[in-house]
Image (cartoon, rainbow, N blue to C red):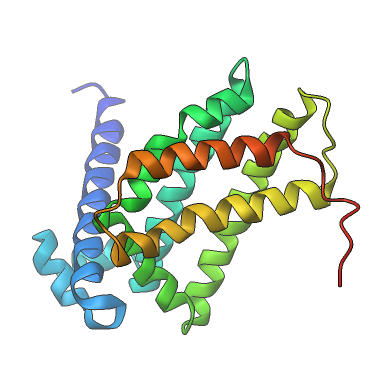
Length: 212
């Protein structure tokens, strides 16, 4: 066997095991909640020993860190593709339908809501979620600056931060709506979101908005 092939094979096997554990843990968190899902249950769902899971993850918080880290990687890759597009805003708008569909997916939503619920009472998980949120906001802010600058619009920190928060609230709100009203037409939501996002990105800045 080629000397270089073994490390590559080992790395691929480790990544496959890691993904297997995260998929099993996600299923258990959805079904039983963070506290109700034990490492024993996760190991049974993954089809491997608890010791094997501890080889990859120190505890359940580490598993959550990996889950939200994978989500972050996907968002960073997506936002980088928007920034590389000829028209950044058009690229963002084209991705809205897929983004809405993911947020309204019951499996996705139930897992994210469980993690947020745990973050509200577990300081360690809160730290993980907030750290990822900061990196997400930074990437989206960079994207919005490019989109607005290309149209000669203001890119001051207040304006960019305000747009990021409104957009985040819109998309994260879909997680709750997927539970409250699962039969709503996702295409209609996506169409409305496209209009709102376009108006937000191309609208006036917020740097001179008066505060009460």
